[in-house]
Image 1 (cartoon, rainbow, N blue to C red):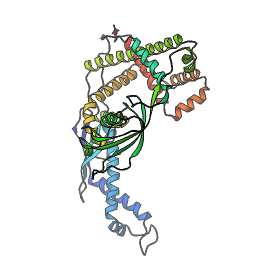
Image 2 (cartoon, rainbow, N blue to C red):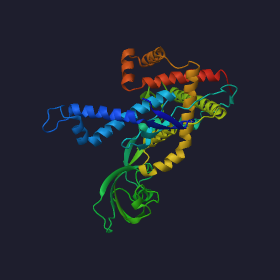
Image 3 (cartoon, rainbow, N blue to C red):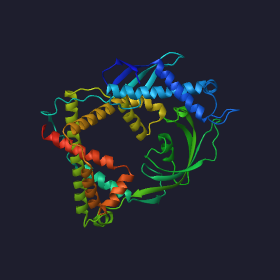
Length: 412
């Protein structure tokens, strides 16, 4: 197709092309669309596919023109991309389309292309490895968490306190100010299941007692219509249970795992925390190194990639729709940094031939299977079904890239 392509923005990740399709090509597309219609449509008085072309074109003029323009835009787009040798990311957009009888078809293509990441400097950087010592408080907190998982709940007759599990009958005033029969709730005080004012009211009553007074709803309550309101609340405490943690002894150690003694369990917890701290420090080193490389080699970021990451995190964090603009504004710098690091890793992997091969992925799957003591084929099928093979490929590639970088830079 002899289309005319005029670049209106020819640099950066966002491009703009003005496209003109000549009249001859427009007529040819309309003729092809009309022939397709003529071969398929049914018109009264004519056998299928035998209606005269002129009749078909008159009867289905709008549909034929719509089909023709869709075909022309797609063909022109494909030719423009090939002729300009563009590496597209994301879906292109058509703007300012003009399609008038007897005139060329014109429109603008808004495109987003992969940025050119040159990376002139990737060595000679010096980063500080952060210290992450494992403290006794961390060990104690981990052990307490294990004890809490195996805690028992014992009924008590005293007023409830933070941390207690209560069953209550709760009534709040309706719009007319009346208190209904109430609804039963079971909640753990201090866990955020109820607003502070209601928790304070609950803690004023022992099992079997009822208390009633006005309670103010928080100013940041999720339901905007209830924010800051004060209304009567009645609470009847039906029962109170207090959590009892098992003692941290040899019996507990044997219960939670294959540990001969309490000391063995404590040592294992400390070792696990130390390994986690080491992994986190390694991640910090990698992040700092990539940030230094990014600062020394600036490049433009694709807006659509950044936005997709922002949207993904908003969904993962279950951000309400009303709060998403504020979240996007606050989170965008984080998303930009992540996209920039990913592009640096991909560029180095491609330039230095460090990308993981299929054989590398198979080897890593075999390692996972050995750790699980499961057949390799079974593990491979499971990972493939969960769509995690790409994740493994990327992990192996990143390991190679960072090994390459650490050989050329200094970590104190």
